[in-house]
Image (cartoon, rainbow, N blue to C red):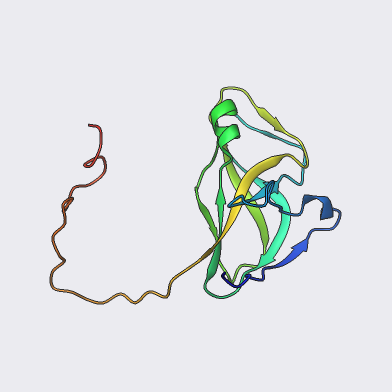
Length: 148
C-alpha cells in the first residue's frame, strides 16, 4: 500500500464546515463547496471562493474538476478544467465556473460546486531530439482519431 500523502489545510475564518471531504471512502476526489451565497451570471465566468487554503508537498498538484451533476442537470462547468493548484500556491482555492444558461444560477453557501483530486507529478526532463518515432496517429491533430 502506498504511503499517505500529507496535505496541510487551513480554512478561512468561519469556514470550518466547508472542509473538503470525500462523500464516500473510495471516491477519487474531495468535494469543494462555495463559501458564499452567490449568483452565477448567464453566459459568463465567475470565480467562486471555497474558503480552502492548502500546502501541497513538492511533486504534487491539486486538480479542480467539475461535478458531473452540475454539468448534466444545470449546464455549469469549471472553465479551466481541470484547474491546477501548484505546490507553491498558498492562496484560497477558487473555482472558475461558467454558466452556459440564459438565466442566472443561484449557488448557496456550502453547496458542492467542484471536486479536488490530489495527484503526484513525475519528474520530467525534456531531451532535444532530431526526430521523433513514428506512431499510428502520426501528426493527426484535433479530431483525427474520432468522428469527423
